[in-house]
Structures are given as C-alpha cells and as structure tokens.
Length: 318
Image (cartoon, rainbow, N blue to C red; front, side):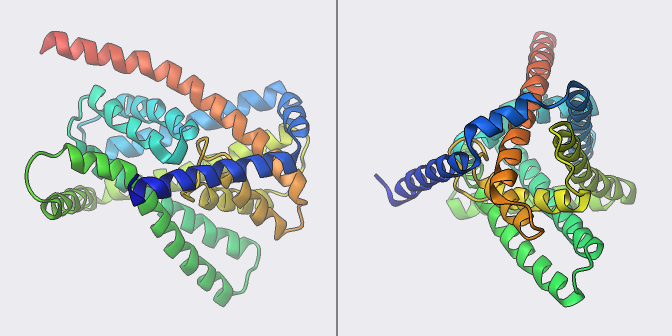
C-alpha cells in the first residue's frame, strides 16, 4: 500500500472514530427526538431555504460558465452533485460533479475542475466575509477580528486545496499525454482563464459575489428555521457563529460519512465560545445536518431525471 493510500485510510478511520465519539456524546436518542419533533411548517420553510441556496449556487455556476450552462441546467448539476458530497467519505462525492457537468453539456475534466475550484474559492471568500460580519456584530475587538480572519483565511485556503485533492488527481489523470507539470500548468491556466472571463464583466463579477454571499445567508436562515422548529430558541448571532465553525469543520480531511462528525465538531466548538453546552450543540447539529441531507436527496431525485432526459435528447439530436 502506498504512503498516500495509507494516509487516506488512516484519515477515514480517524473520521469514523470522531463521528462515533461525537454521536455517542450527543446521545443518538436525543438526536432522533430532536429530528422527529421538528415542526412540519418549519420543515417546509427550511426546505424552501435549502431550495433557495441551491438556486443561488446554480445561478453562480451558470454565470461562471459564461453562458455555456443555462441557469436551470446549472442548478440541476449542483443538485445532482451535492447529495454524493454529503454522504460519501473523504470528499469523494466531489467526483459526481464531473459526470453531472458532462450530462449537462459541458465536457472536459480540466474545465470541470476549473469550475469546481472556482466555486470552492468563492465559498471560502463568502465564508470569510460572513466571519467578518459576525466579528463586527458581536463587537469583537478589531485586532482580534483581523487576526482571526487571517487565520481562518489560511486554514480555509489549505482545506479547500485538500478537499479538491481527489477530484484534481482524477482530472489530471484523465488528460492524455504530457508530463504532470504540463498538466498542472494547463489546469492553472484554465482557472485563470475562467477568472478573467468573469472579471471582464463587472455585472457578472458582482452577481457571482452576491450569489456566494447569499448562499451562506440562506444556509444561516435554514439552520435558524430548523432549530426554531426543534424548539431551540438560540440567538441568531450565535447560530451564525456556529454555522461558520461547522463550515470550517466540514472542510477537515477526516470524513467517513460525508461531513458528519467534523461538521458537528466545528459547530459545537464555535457554540461553546458563547456558552452553549457541548451535548446540546452536538445533538442539534446532528439533527439539523440529517434534515439537510434529506433535502439534498429530494433535490437530487428531481435533478437526475432532468439531466438524463436532456442528455438523451442531445444524443438523439446529435
């Protein structure tokens, strides 16, 4: 077994152990009780927010594609890829983005990877912007806020590269001919080319940034609605802080079942800074995370037939 494969196996085992320990600490019975007692109107509103988040990501991908992907088709790509990302280990679900993009009419592993990297960079930037907002909202001193954001930027950048590692290896492997240095250079040039196309249109650039910020705002409101439906009246600013911690935790390369475990660890750690007990935070985190996966499954079930039908139609016409 190669050293890289061994490290991946050890990371998956560590992720499984972390998930088991945190789930035990949260008490599975309490997690199930919270999920079951979520009020039906709250679930409907939360699903609406989840759909809005999906639409924001779809619009952003459509804008990044420069017109190659209509908004509806781009949204279907995101919907088809997000469920595997939330349930498969070690971020392997990212690989589902490539066949979904191909089915939508945008072929090429390098181009697909460019879109994937760009969306991750924009997600990190949007998260950092919300982190600054939280610091200002909670009246964190300026120097501490700046230092925290700088640390988060470095961590998030590193974790973004780690998160797309598997997808990058696959995309570069699919390229024929040439040395690995040439393939990496081509990938960097493709990303630069996509960024330049976006920056040449101020309207498109502003819209892409707005979609990235709106995505995190929608996730925040989704979480608030779910917790309210469970009867947890936690302050919105504390929930926003927990959401940022959860997003950073989810980026850790220790995933056994999607981002379960690492996401809850980041969520509980962030909420602990504002006095929320760890057991309560973990139980609420697992329950709300489970509902989010259920929403992603519904979106995926709707998107897949649409993508397959469109792909079949294009093959017949071609």
